[in-house]
Length: 157
Image (cartoon, rainbow, N blue to C red):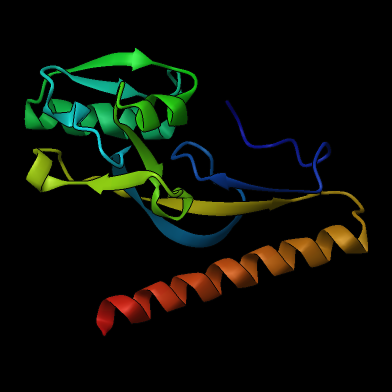
C-alpha cells in the first residue's frame, strides 16, 4: 500500500510507513497492548491476537516483538478487533491515543514485550483544496501537538 493519492484526498492523518517518505510529521505515538477490562486472554498459550491483515504496520511490529521474545501466538481474528478485545476473545495493539473505555493496557507484568512508537504524518492535497480543509488540517495538527505536549508534561511531573 502506498501513500494516499494527493489528488484524491484533501487531508489524511496516517501512520508513517518505513518505505514511504511522504507527509508532514505530526508526532510520535506509543503502541500499547490492550485487553478487555476484566479479561485475561494474555494468559493463554499461545496468546490469541486480534490484528489487521498482513501489510499493517501494527501487525508487523507486534508479531516481530513476540517472535523476538519467543512468546507463542496465534491469530484469533482479523476483523472486529475491538469486539474481540472487549469480549476477552483476544488481545490487540493500538496507538495509546486510541484507547477507549473498557480497554486495559497490558505490559511486562503480563509477559508481553515492549512495542515501538509509531509516527503520525499528515498528507494534504497536492492540488487546490478548500480553505475549510486547510483549517481542519491545521486544527488537527495543533491539537495533536498540544495533546502530545500535555502528555509529556504529565510524564515529567
